[in-house]
Every structure is written in C-alpha cells, then in structure tokens.
Length: 301
Image (cartoon, rainbow, N blue to C red; front, side):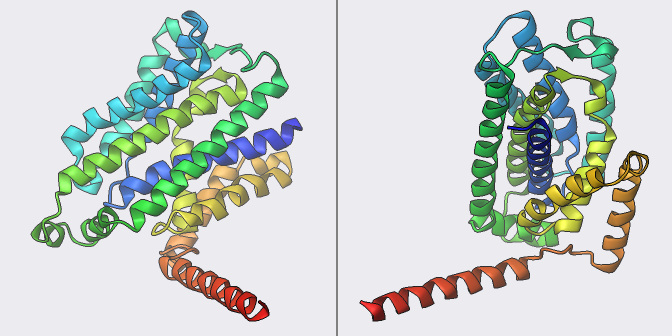
C-alpha cells in the first residue's frame, strides 16, 4: 500500500472514530471532550507497555480499550447526568491535566514523546495492513453499534433526553444510567482509537492530542449532521483530504478554515448536511428499490 494512501485512509478512519465517540454522548446533549484525553492516556499507556515491558501489540491494544472504558466509567459516575456546560468544562480540564502529567513523566518521554515503536508483523508493509484491518473492523463494529443504538429503545430515550430532560425523566428514563452508558462506550472507542493513532506513525507526541482534535471532530459532527452518525462518514474524508490539495502555506491555516466552515454552517444550516429526514428518505428509497427488483425477478421467473 502506498504510504500517502495509507496515511489518508488511516487518519480519516481515526477522525471518523473520534467523531463517533463524541457523537454518542451528544445524543444525550453531552459534549464529552474527555475522549481526546482518553486517546492520550490509552495511547501512551499502550506504547509504554510495548516499549518498556515488551507486551505484544494485541494485548496493549486491548489494554487501551479497557483503560479508556475504566476512565470513562469513573468520570461518568460524577457527570453522568450533568448539564452540557459542566461536561464540556470537565472534558477541557481533563485534556489540560493529562497533557501536564504526560509532560512531567520521563517514563513516557515527557515533552520528547515516544518514538521507534516496533512494526506489527515485523516489517512496515505488514504493519500498515494490520493497522488498516483493525481500523476497518472498528469502523464496521462501531457503525453497526451506533445504527442499532439509534433504532433501539435506548436511542429513543436518548432523543427524549436531548429534547427535554424533565420530560424524559417523567417518562421513566434513567438519565444518569443512560448518560453513564454512552460516556463509557464513547471513552472505550476513544481509548482504542488513541492507541491506533500513535501506532499509525509508530510514535506518540503531545502534539497529537491537542485541542485541534476537538475542533476537527466538532466540524465533522456539526457540518456533517449531528443527528445521525452517517454525516461523519461523508464529511471526514472530505475535510481531511481536500486541504491536502492546497499549497502548504494554505494547509497551515486548515484549523482556521475548519472553524470558519463550522461557524457558517451553524448559522445557515444548524442541523448539518446529513439529517435524519435525509437518512430516512434514503432508506425508504433503497428499500423501495430492493422491493421493485424482487418483484421484477419474480415476474421473470
């Protein structure tokens, strides 16, 4: 696999997974930015296990998922039913704390970071294919989970909480329990994504886990459409790929461009480009097309 294609596909997959990790708690009106902090915690922990204790990558990746879930669950105990603003503040504070701790931990390279992570499978080509296979599997599993969640009783409960917490509570929705569930699953996804993010480059540095990641994910979610996970799939490759076609001088301003696009879309089209109505229309159209093909096939027989 050519190196430019590998980086494009892998980083696009990371952006989708990160955006989905933010999308899930936003279903109950929580902007849970602790996901970025969890990416750093799990990523650095997995790198330390591999480099210092010589733990196989597979076990280190599983440890990253588990650590993300544990941190998410502990934090959710306190903010599972907190207001949106409180969740945002906790997330930003957590990012700052985690970055400060890592900067002062020589065991994980402090400000220098961790470099020279080994190739999975023994050579660069195998390493790239393994990373891509894992990312593809995560995308399929996470997308399937989000689809099932949105069409389940929990998804309908989340929609009620998003619109009116008091109304949802009067209908018997366990607001804190639901909030803890989506926050914990979100952090689990972020934990595994953080491990893969560093292993894509075979290194970890604090510059990988900055507030810019929050801006990228926010742009993908709200421009793509915050009410459905499928807008993320459409927008993530466009948002990451199009700036690569620009001259380097313009690429340096991509975060500013993302912010400008986000503001414009929030003003002119607050629901984003891919809405639930659009998804429902497409599902009906595809379902009708399948039925029509089945009818034609029976007539031919």
